[in-house]
Image 1 (cartoon, rainbow, N blue to C red):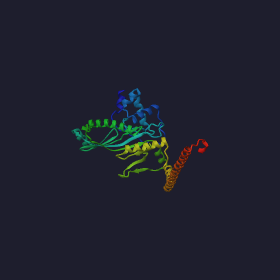
Image 2: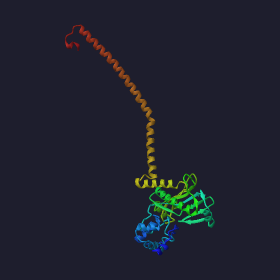
Image 3: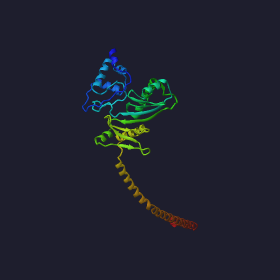
Image 4: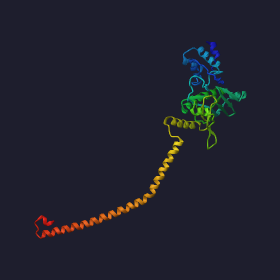
Length: 338
């Protein structure tokens, strides 16, 4: 068992992804599971052993077979994870991939260990990430990909990883990079990509290239990419990539779930609505004359009613006078009053 442990490097070393041949790569069940543990769940060697409840030798043999099949080289520990779509499972189907992150970190304090590391070389590789060392700052160019169901979850997972990574970097370089209430870490760049995107598939099938540029600063914020054979639609603006990706996802989900009208349908509906408005305007134009005629008719009717009421009062008064007069003349028959 000691020999096996010596064969496995548990340090953070980059996993190298080879260009896979066009033929399909056959994987057994255990190989698929361990490849997922390495590339999607980012487990260490010991964590894989604990999850599978098997010997270290068994896990090592499977890792060695994955290397022989060209899926990984070097150490198994990495967060940059890429699979060919020729694989039989859909591990990364429609996942959100956060990658290409870049950080600029101002060093809070440093020891002689840092200067010694810088003298040996101002660029180092740790866990697939490239770190450039400067006198008062360091730059981190991520080699990591975080596959999750949405942008927010991917962001949370990346934050957890980078907190651990920066803490480790402090120890290895002899520096202090994180301090409460000190804002010395700047996220310079990040890309959010939906893998296995229908839009990307359609563009790739038609051999169309899409790049959308912002109006305010002229930077590309949306593009189609297939560099890892993942058929991705990406939002890549350095400042608004997350918000842009969330907005695109919202619209695409709305199209998929609610089937809203197309632009041509909206235009047609607007034309129909405008025709109705024009007809109503024509009616409204003639409406004042109609209202004026109605007002005159009502005024005339009221005048007639007033006259009728006046004549009615005169007639009733005459009848009353007649009845009183006949009463005084001692009329006793009812017919005399008629």
